Amino acid sequence: MNIQWYPGHMTKARRQIEADLKLVDLVIELVDARIPISSRNPDIDSICAGKPRVVILNRADQSDQQITQAWVDYFSKTLGHSTAAVDARTGNHVGQTAISLARQELKEQIARWKEKGQVGRLIRAMVVGIPNVGKSTFINQVAGRKSAKAGDRPGVTRGKQWVHIENGLDLLDTAGILWPKFEDEQVGLHLAYTGAVKDDIMDVETLGCRLMDDLAEKYPEALQVRYKIEIPRKEPKQDAVAYGYMLLQEAAAKRGFRISGGELDTERMAYILLDEFRGGKLGRFTLEAPEELQK
Image (cartoon, rainbow, N blue to C red; front, side, top):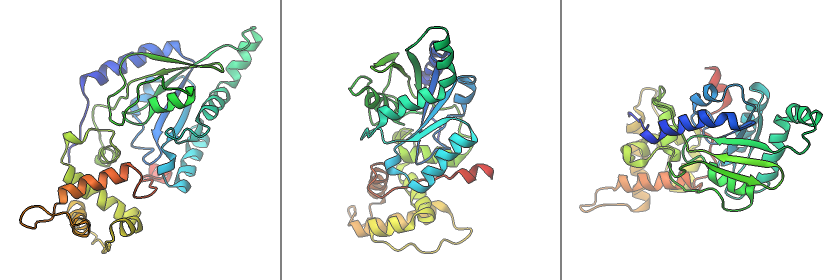
């Protein structure tokens, strides 16, 4: 499956981020807690090199808590970034967390400002991340009001948006950017599962088969509980799509999804699977672990 999505507005967004970096003291990078490797644009490290960094693992309410904590430790202890896991949709303590992390990351700079008599100097931070990772929702929660345009599909944010936070923080919202080519097919699949790339650029039924295959390997009990299906042993050389299609058929049969002639409607089942995965109805999943980076 060849998943590529790099429309022209992403090139423009990248150039805008590069130009605006000189305006900010700090970069706040949002990643998806369910796929922390795949949802990190590798270009961000080169674009934002030299700027203090805060990493926010968003959608923590949908991720595996134990693995998410391992990711917080990785980003904070291994990479040295101030890090927290949050759910920007419910907004529990998101504002306090973001402000605290920003001040923690800039504590030496803030001390220098005070020495120069710049007490209470405004912190300006840029919020970056891939499409549909929740940047605008995060900003709105930190601000305590609906300021940045938010949506549940990639490519919503347009133009430069500064949002002033009352206790000394200004946030600059940016358009989500992907990178021109996914070298690892699994990265492209993970981004497609979570909706970071648009469904209409790929075969949704095949995507559903791959998601079934991945969940059967990592969280088989979730599929058993949700769709009332058995998860047979996968043979070592068995094709992922063929195995996933078998499970998709089983789930479609249990749901009674059929088209004219009685054939199982596996396409409808694929849409349902993706929708329920993205909406958290299947359970809490993290598809990547820090130890995978050592492979």
